[in-house]
Length: 271
Image (cartoon, rainbow, N blue to C red; front, side, top):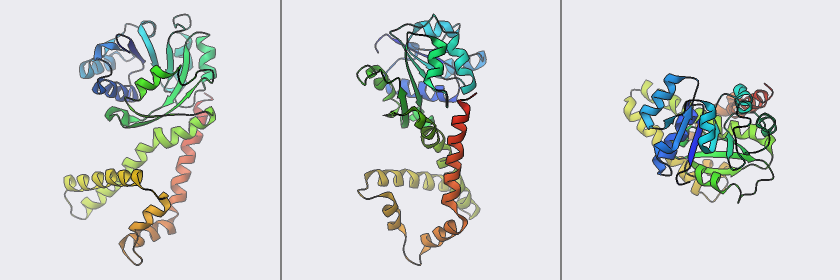
């Protein structure tokens, strides 16, 4: 990637998270990253915060980049891609970060030429701990995709998805799920505060518990449905909480939320 530029069309939250992760990894200097966004104030803000170069237009950002991310809203991605027709080259990668939009629609918009992928990262890219689902055109081998893997691996773990229809599920599990985890943490913290524990202490305890639990689960050698039962003592405190969740159908409600997230990802692809 030396001396090659990385482009972002769209400078919203996910673009900022990815740019921050790329820069802090040392993989690219700020000046190697070029951004374009219709919101000029947002461009300036991101430039002042992280230092990427501001392109004068989407076309200029596309022309300069070896790897170009389309980080716009799903309903905008096909239109934005279409305006790059004739600008993009065969040696470029164009990577959509938009939920729902199939690569076939983007290919129709840009025409022949660039190599296409779509990804679903999450905001943990800013601290280089994202999980990233990636679907690439089937003709592209892992060797062809080496520059993409090299870049995205700076942001976390990359998983190639072979069936594009599964990207909607990846959106729910990877793209959306951090919000659900943080919502749960927020609820736990609020409960602690309501019981008189100082907010700073409750926050440190809950976030530390989440981090420790994730590490514990990652290193466990037993299925997760067996692992969490190790915390449960018959007649104890954990069992009391779990019985209430079971009575209220907590898991069913949670899974239904994931189902609705998946459904919405598929709906966005039809727009």
